[in-house]
Length: 291
Length: 291
Image (cartoon, rainbow over all chains, first blue to last red; front, side, top):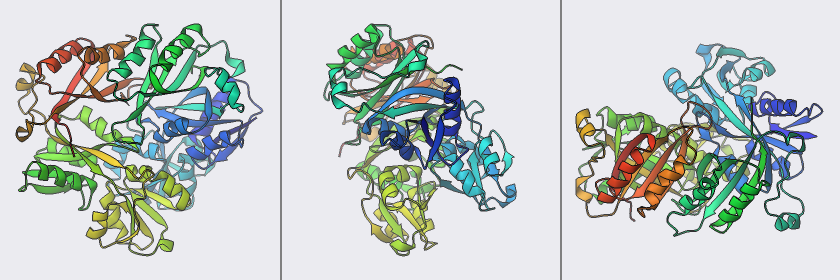
């Protein structure tokens, strides 16, 4: 089994994949590295990986916009989630006083916003495809430092100048595990809520993720959708809006809730929601993460 | 009157402020420039500006995380909104084939994500405090290009190598106009929903923005809040979640809706909501933007 992760080695996405494969005894899984979130997700779609692991949400900086967009645009299914503790370090080849440029993934820079503003107010900030890519670059030039993981420090033989530099000590990122959507489109059509769940994990509580686009000019439409969950006492774990990109003030809603799409109660709720919305995309049901 | 905008000259925030002051005949307003979103907002809080204009939401990339965070953390009131059409250009001193580094505000980079991935896959991307700051830097080094406005091209005498490079042709950013919160804390306590609205604009329809933090372990709490609006037929224009930063899966909700907090119907809804939530912060009522 090939697992697509964000590369190069030492990324948080690789760490998430290691945790996830260890949990499900997939020790034979082989990791393949991709340049950024988009390429890692596309690897699963295009068959370059069997599964791919990408970040979806961080406890300081919130949702990863590009991941939400790709979940809507591409034909993928969610089969798992894993939460990783994020402890950003400032890594460099040289000394603290030599730093002229700080590199990281935009989420890494955002999670250390206060730190950067306080300690490096004039320093140039550069975006990279992953935190480990930032670390690799920092290994090449002494005036560069990276915001990345302790593992990346080891991989690229960098000095850890400062540890735990994110703006809140408690910092977690939720990663999702994806596979390509159903190959046979008819299979999906016959049973739109059929979710291929990861076979080994039937014994833990499940979560389901979906995207809805509400019928326009129907005030209270979102209230009705939430009502379909509330009246069945289905617990929502997340609701997030994301621009439709058609016009300002027009949104898709991303909803996560407890339960499996094959449960009678959830099936019923989804049937109810289906007639109330313009678009419903069920992203998948998967075992809820537990430490 | 001093209006704080993101600097240097040529920023979209300055353009928003120009549109807004022209609309309300505030021709004598003087602009003062600040380094980034945080400094521009803090200028209003600290009395360095009477009003400040910062971006809150873009039609391609969604909410501006730092703005949402600051609206919660700092004592500010919203007094206006203005929507600006965003037409990003690729600006440089040199030629297209000389570009080694592309600079912009993180939102600018994100709004041009497809463009950058397609045309500049290996090029270094750098984050700046504003798009105009990117343009000013691009004026200093021939290997640098900026993603910024046509106005910035003019300001910094740069060549417009490419125009309208954002991933969707229709691209709009909503800016908000802020002032410092009530100076006298008792005034606020006596009437928590008292909103100082901008005096000259009483004749247009209003919008109100608020932030709520829901009581924990109360499933369906969000549904109840939306119900307070739905049963009064108050139209929501936006709902957005933002991490509380305390733990993953714990959120504040940002809600925008039609109406003024001094309207009887809205007052009634707010009283209803107040008892259902843990925290309610009314950010202000302001004239809804119209072209």
